Image (cartoon, rainbow, N blue to C red; front, side, top):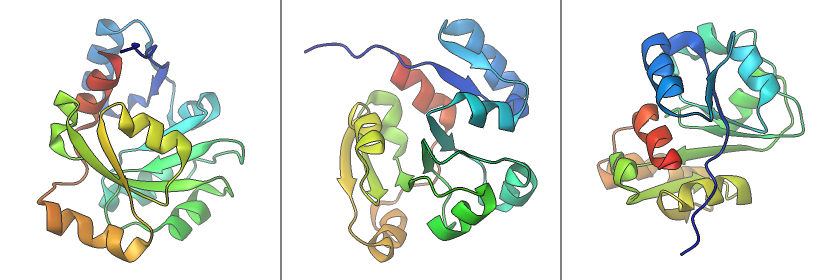
Length: 159
């Protein structure tokens, strides 16, 4: 099996302690100046903000139309995210399970997008959802706590 090359990962300074530890441990992880700096430097932006913090964290962040946004925020719709981020770029919602740390996660994505599906396929199995309604039911039906810890996901991607 061919090993994937670890991606360059840009982190927000918001979770300073975890971001610093990850950037010291992995050479391809960098901590950016702020959330906009992360968005400017990223082809794929993975949002791991708690839903109740989204207004405060994303209010001044703008994402260009040439990337992909993957949201791990439960209960926050794609339309709302596009409006908040001021973008027409593809937005994918994903629900990875805590087993992401062992690369055994079954991750529900909606809608399916090759970039998101490729990312999560490397961390287990991807289950694209055809409708947002079935995506909304996934956490309850799988017993998943959403979102799973981002540092576990990053560590798994980099292994």
